[in-house]
Length: 71
Image (cartoon, rainbow, N blue to C red; front, side, top):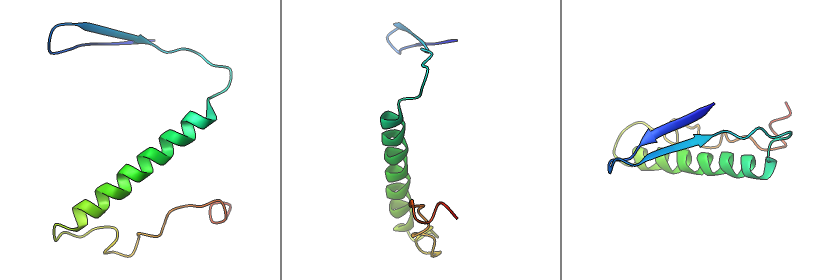
């Protein structure tokens, strides 16, 4: 399956997914950590504007770690 888009300058960009036998775990973990950091930063910025945030509600420390994620 391929994905295509056109840039504002009219240039067409197309990407085709490559099948892998196993996922690249290092890149996957890096992506998840990056997204978690962005979400965490976003929550703190939104909370400073006087609105209700996860930190204000007491959910700031709900991050799963290997010791807490095994249940």
